[in-house]
Length: 481
Ligand SMILES: *[C@@H]1O[C@H](CO)[C@@H](O)[C@H](O)[C@H]1NC(C)=O
Ligand SMILES: *[C@@H]1O[C@H](CO)[C@@H](O)[C@H](O)[C@H]1NC(C)=O
Ligand SMILES: *[C@@H]1O[C@H](CO)[C@@H](O)[C@H](O)[C@H]1NC(C)=O
Ligand SMILES: *[C@@H]1O[C@H](CO)[C@@H](O)[C@H](O)[C@H]1NC(C)=O
Ligand SMILES: *[C@@H]1O[C@H](CO)[C@@H](O)[C@H](O)[C@H]1NC(C)=O
Ligand SMILES: *[C@@H]1O[C@H](CO)[C@@H](O)[C@H](O)[C@H]1NC(C)=O
Image (cartoon, rainbow, N blue to C red):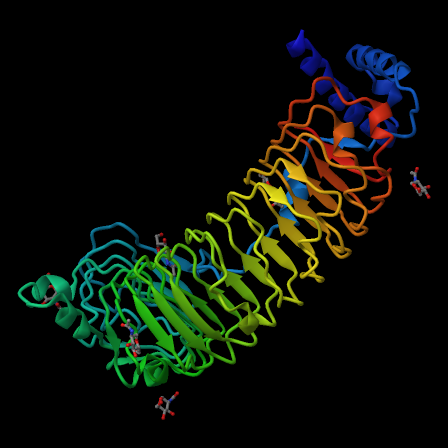
């Protein structure tokens, strides 16, 4: 019996969409038998509806498209990629050498020789004056030997994951620490005055040359991901050019990080440093700091008055009481996903906070008025917790909230007037809860701003009727599958 119901239910939605397109195209002449049949079922279904008031646009299945607009994430600057326009691709060809007369073109802008066995760079750039992007990732270039790379236009250089590493030659170093103190990226013969992005990830590097900044005076992003760093040398930030804005140090072994000078860096990524215990950062330029997947994190001292985005996800936090949120008075986005929080953290100083994400913690209930410390909150995500109850006043004062994700919890019924304060709510997601009936959402038409309501994967015991839909604000689209 149940199966059949679902079947009808699905058709019902199909019908509504068809009906709409029929209206638009005014193609009643072309209407075939099959559509007529559907229209009859359609009419029958609506005959049961008690207060049928234009529900035609109330149900949809195309949810993903709307969902995208509400993404709750910090802006990670993506890895730059060589384009395919005016490009030469020689990836995976087992090349050992590139002679300068092979590539000779004023037009060429992108060269990729990814995954070959090239061991020197002397001539690659000689006859391609307009080159923009060079991908030398996974070759055999010895980055410790002072390779020559000179070009006046190159903007993107990928030197990541060279297949030989100094570590191999230095196997007999007694102390691993000594070893890493002496692995220097040698940029002596590199002059790339317009380079903006340099990827050195996947090579063992412990240090830069003192005149690194002179080789790359316009560098904006430097990737040192997975370089086996356990410390950041104290002079690091005086070696990098003042043009640098984004620094990637993910997946290393950093354990104690004291940064009193971060040059002009705006975005610092330290995710995946499992040994990181102590972090002290003072910076007047930093706007984005990513510290996810650093489960040893114990102490943090932050003097970052202009920080706007902070990611503390995947850190096994049971509480955040020892983090001094006073230091984050400009914070707009805070991510605390995948921790072990059992309660909504009580943080009182984030007047500017627009987005708070607490997905996949162990939160059970939402006490009254708990969010009133976040008067500017626009997006709140609580998906993947164990929330079974919310109070009538749980969301009190969230007058600016536009987006609320309560999916993947254990909610069965929401209390009367729970959404009273949410006068700007546009998006509500209660997918994968225990609602049996759409009326149990207790969303009355007071929430007139609501545009998108997603209710997939609940345990609706019967199909949604138009009578029920009539209780929703009249501009709400309900997403059901
Ligand atoms: C809300 O959570 C669901 C998963 O439960 C997810 O599919 C959806 O993308 C989330 N919405 C947004 C806008 O992040
Ligand atoms: C180099 O090529 C590899 C493999 O295609 C790719 O993953 C990487 O992003 C490329 N680097 C750049 C800067 O395009
Ligand atoms: C590159 O490899 C060739 C052998 O394939 C060798 O003769 C040459 O010395 C190497 N050059 C560098 C710079 O290591
Ligand atoms: C490089 O750094 C040194 C020392 O910090 C500084 O004196 C010099 O002006 C910098 N040069 C460039 C081109 O940034
Ligand atoms: C962490 O580093 C700072 C500065 O480099 C140093 O003063 C402090 O003693 C270090 N702490 C530990 C526990 O290693
Ligand atoms: C929706 O409701 C508002 C106010 O309740 C009303 O002004 C408007 O005409 C309604 N729109 C439709 C399409 O019923």
